[in-house]
Length: 181
Image 1 (cartoon, rainbow, N blue to C red):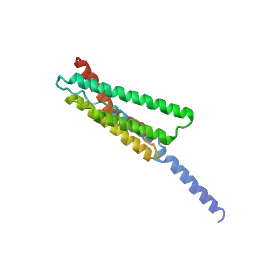
Image 2: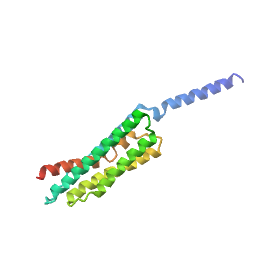
Image 3: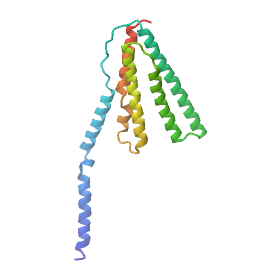
């Protein structure tokens, strides 16, 4: 009787190990399927919408200039932010909280600058809308990352909404080639 008790424990342990080894979580095919699904989701996020055709207007050049100025201002602000964060890091005064707050402020600044654009053309407002959607997505993603400690879908989250940004850039580039200043 005493001999059967250890054998029973060993049998139960071995069964648990074998079942665990055969579970679908450890199945390489399942991991491949998950990787494929993640890759497909990322590719979907990176897919741009087709270029829209808008009628030419006398205000096209002015709106293009405003959009270019927005991008230049945002780039300058972002470069200054990065330099400030690097300086604080080198001085040892950068905390995770400060880093996160500055990055959140950068996103909010982009949204505010876009709101302030007074674009007169349908195409300009279309591009403005795409850019605004991108930055709203970035704000949501940033806030979700701050709320969650688990970063399972990090690759997908990092590209969420990128199609809006890429579409806006392609639309603006196309518009520039068709417009003389």
